Length: 192
View 1 (cartoon, rainbow, N blue to C red):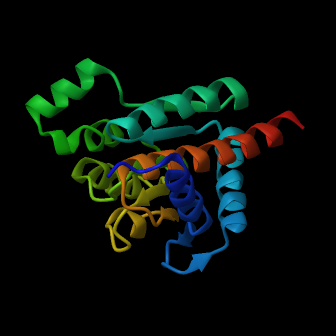
View 2 (cartoon, rainbow, N blue to C red):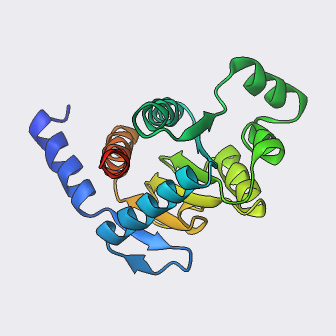
């Protein structure tokens, strides 16, 4: 049986209202505090002329690209995504697909940079490898995940936003809402 629009909206609303944020120690913090800490990190990256990197697969890669453009255009932040087809295919072919984010971060990441990792499942090996590489360089890591409560990604970041929904459509829609809210906070802070 097909899901009705009303049912989809109910599930999305429920997932968003139950979204929570945890710190590096796994302790839950309020969503407001999570967004304020994330905003402070972005403003510090801007002040110190560091870079915001965004990574994801599929629709999450599209979100990474979209928000990299918004951050650059609307907030003046230096941003980077690893979406160049030649880079992705060369690393995937010559090393492994698991290395498509890890390898470029190994060469580019600097201490104090910000890495935003988006994964609906929170289990993508290339995202996890990229996050671990970023942590090794002293990057501040923010994760967005969904699906399984115990997914690997949601225990790796300085801030971890988790949406308790089980479908990719709901996870991706919720992640876009989280990113838009954060982007609005950043934009408001830099234009005041």
